[in-house]
Amino acid sequence: MVDPNPRILPYGMAAIDEAAERIGRGECVAVPTETVYGLAADAGNADAVAGIYAAKGRPSFNPLIVHVADLAAAEALAVFDADARALAARFWPGPLTLVLPLRTDAPIASLVTAGLATIALRVPRHRAMQALLAATKRPLAAPSANASNGISPTRAAHVAASLGNRVPLIIDDGGCEAGLESTIVAGRTILRPGPIVASDLPFAVQAHSIDSTDAAITAPGQLATHYAPGKPLRLDATAAAADEWLIGHGPVKGDDMLSATGDLREAAARLFDALHRADASDRAAIAVAPIPHAGLGEAINDRLTRAAHR
Ligand code: TXA
Ligand code: MG
Image 1 (cartoon, helix red, strand yellow):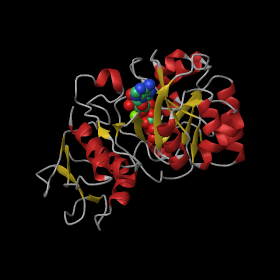
Image 2 (cartoon, rainbow, N blue to C red):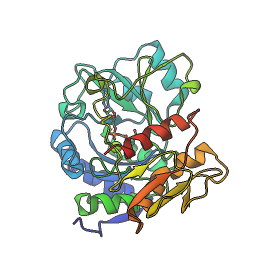
Image 3 (cartoon, protein in one colour):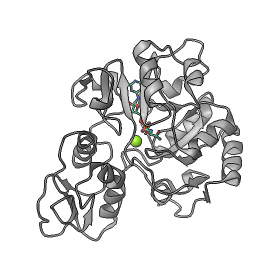
């Protein structure tokens, strides 16, 4: 069992100062972003990055997203073309990750990119992650702050329950606004659907099928079993079977609701929280109401499909 009592500090100067000091020492720290809580470490320090993999129990072939303060910091690490610059101008800071050619001189530990010639970069909007980037003056590698294959954390308590004392410090700044991991774009392909949807983009994109056989090359982290709760999960349920915890949405009333009014933004923000509650409930299985596939529904259904696949 993990230690249920890791150190948790509310967002503020004391938390950021301690976090920056720990990152400078090569430790990792859990910090909220506008998408999910991340487990951050200095992306230039291979030992520190190894600490992330160790804490998460993550397979080492899975590359990490690097967070930087602004576009200038991103351009020091990767080569931007006109499309990438347009996306950065429009969506940074925010929940968009760009996969770009890695500069050969970029001071990034090769463990971060798992040896790929590309790097996934994001400029986050959240005040805590922005403050940490400013205080450390380092690019920060940060996957979601949960044990590998667990449900992503949208609250400090989720991080504590999943990682316990494997993380020395958790900065608590409440629930995450988007509640889903960032949209990942490579060229004109969406590798991972997320808070920024295809119709938001200034050009037509291909949706990449994560189940395709080349998934290992283009989006190595998009393993089918990602986000799995510890119980069987049934999708498109309109009523609970015996011993099922029903997560409702819109007209389908459940033990818990993603959004009573059918609002997809609210549903996305509540999704992982609802899965955590379902996992912790006394029922043996989980059922989830149908979620429309349009707009943000694509990203929600993507995460649910993975959660159901175990
Ligand atoms: O919202 C988010 O993006 C959160 C917060 C903490 O920022 N982070 C996050 O990171 O979701 P992580 O490590 O859980 O997801 C990394 C994803 C994986 O699907 C991985 O395969 C993909 O990014 N990725 C990383 N580098 C890549 C690369 N060079 N090429 C293709 N995919 C890459
Ligand atoms: Mg994750």
